[in-house]
Length: 81
Length: 252
Image (cartoon, rainbow over all chains, first blue to last red; front, top):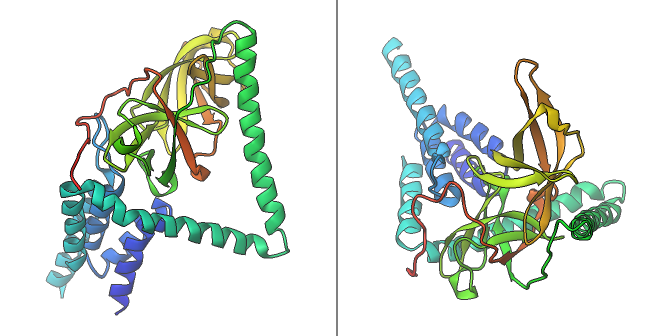
């Protein structure tokens, strides 16, 4: 329930709030759902990114980076347990 | 995992039916704007200052518009401008920088309203903001001069020294100039309009003693985060660097 609400809030913040808050919520969500940062990054770029020389889809790239880190940390934690 | 599926579906929706996609999301952005305005009033309501805050905001915007008109007229008087008042296309803003890290504006007007790629966008007071970079049937995108990678030719101060203005992202601009040019904080930056139109002013000068030049940090004249509409006109401005692929579509 809590995870779902957090994921929803992260998606809503893409439209409602400045991007630093969205990034913060995405990082917090990654502790529970590692794919949320990638999903939110993809969603943000779907709304705002415009392909142009020198302009990278930064939201997706950062989201993917956070997701990879989250998956790595989770796999290490499982291995330790 | 469901979140990723939702994001992918949104992406496919955007790619397959971009115009319909923006029709669906426009009410969402409008709702966000209303919510932001309400919360602004609510916060200012403490201490009964809401009216004063709104009045202050209105007067600030009016002052900016008058200052810009004054600067443009001053250039005309000194023989360096050739202002021609031309009517453009008014378009409301659907999404603006606070929600957008890429310094683009999404406008509620597209090819049906006569908007074409390459038209220049002006804010209140005839302030140049950016260039139309993609057009759909009912929506269009403006890439702001402050977008990273954007380069605009302009001038600084009443002496009209030429310089290249670079987008620094998040609504900021910067430019490099020779130290001997003697630029000072407060100098006005102009871009071609028609005539010379003020785009911002120097707020900080970064200087490295080992370098022959200085870096000017420029603040745009208008607050890009509170714009509600823009006027689009054909001025011959070019988007530099150009978009990879012009997103012009007749899809629903």
